[in-house]
Length: 284
Image 1 (cartoon, helix red, strand yellow):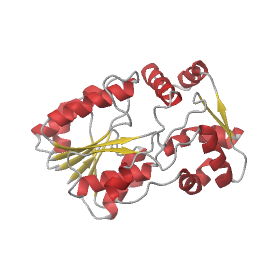
Image 2 (spheres, rainbow, N blue to C red):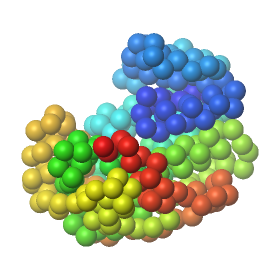
Image 3 (cartoon, rainbow, N blue to C red):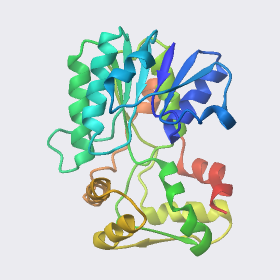
């Protein structure tokens, strides 16, 4: 059986759907047991787990052979994921597919990239067979801006004219499923990007064509972005991490186009035009 953590997030939902469609038994770890009421899927067992209480993970991991590891990016993420790896080793898990981040590096000024690097190192030294996925900025991250896109025909970020090789979450899920169900991915690290490096203004142009009305990207100062995120309830640690991420983009450190999707599943990654067309109705 395969365990998918973070099963209600963008990546987890796509992975669970793909595994279930192939009649592969899946255990979906969630924080709220009410999850299955309206979204139950055949072949999917929903279990409640708490990363902050590693002892509860023993039951979650019982009988699991492969696991997809993902947590929220919080100040606890590094400790949570390393504790999960420790319990997985105790439980006899054979393989962990970890969702990391593009350019993960222990010496990065970006806290998200540092904690991912630390977890990667712990996983590599655990003795468990691993596959590491390092996706760039998600195309689906633009759905976080759909309110202002719908009401103001605009979205705002401290991105400047930075080019970012954004990647479709559906491609990440395809690679994750391949790594969880096929041989040949053991010990691999896949950098996952789209086929183009785009500015946020270029993304706005693509959305405009797909939606059928003019969408504008508005660059804002980092401090304004910080105030906005805090104002809508983002925790301080996560807010500062997102600002570090956007500084990383502005330095041109996320514009490389990688072949990870092609290498892993033998097909080209989806373009931003594909994303814009397929998700257009969600921005109405």
